[in-house]
Image (spheres, rainbow, N blue to C red):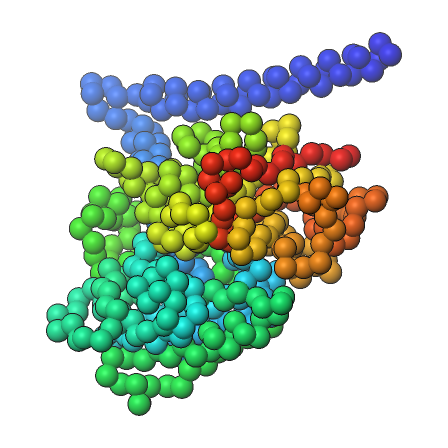
Length: 488
């Protein structure tokens, strides 16, 4: 017993010592910078070198974080075009639902997705939207252009949308829902709902979409709708120097926005100027590689921790808000909420007013959690139970999906193509109408298989609850999901 106690005390002391070393290490770094020599007010060669390295590193980190909304969506474009080809007439559709072969942040596997990346560089583009769709257009900074479908101007009846490039100077023709994009590229994002658990009707509706240059419908290429469920595709941002190389290509292609001049000034000091070669030397390559890695980790703590005010949804639960601050463009009264913006695009994509509107029976809501009832991060080697009380406030349907912490893509557990449970399936409910869901590396003893999602040992993950057409009990918080309780 004394030997065991001694071992515990040694381990505890070691932990405290290591924590102190880490904190002291950061303090020493800043102290060393502050104490660099400036004899007579001028820097020594060593002082100049170290401060320039630190300045370039800090700027590279901030550029990475600032550009995350654009690089998030541009990574999706690059992955899609590599797998399915480029062109406004190509609209990939996940006809068999979006499975774990598609690596993209927090996808919804319980609806039918269609995503493409329109290019307006050659001029205005018309999108004929079929009736019964739900979707949106975002520019390539992930800023909403407009909602489409039931919460858009066509009110679910369909219609012709005309997208104008940022430099368009012609007349605006009548007969369209017309919008000007601040960027040449535009994200088109359609969602169709399952009918009796099947995708057929949604796919048929999506495949009625027609896209063509304004005034050139007859000569435009025929629409192509690849089945994206059949082909692996990587649509995730990178965490090394390639991030900055992609950013340079992006700013070369897109117009300059005066609002971005300060950040473009930071980019210029790193060698990234629109229209000029980007040729970092060995020193700068090392800085950019390290900065990308650190910036990604900074974005992760901004999402996975709760330093940003308004992150937590319930005072007595571990569930968080997806849109921290409640703005689809992450704006406060007097400033852009950079931390909330970074936190969102670290783990998700697409933004529109329809996603944040607080109206009973309209849109959808997404309470999510990264932690269990004890406040510990969810880990794939543990088993958990999630209790959802009766009366789940979703007038359409609800779903629960698991995403891995490293990438925010769907948990890729062997034999489980879709890491999700939804109310359109045959599930096992409790006698009082509530339901218990189970997550872990193997099915817990006594748990119904219909209510189980597998996880991977050694990998963290998080849980998103989707409520479609949320009811009043969600907004007034008279209904709350239970916390995840660890079973082992």
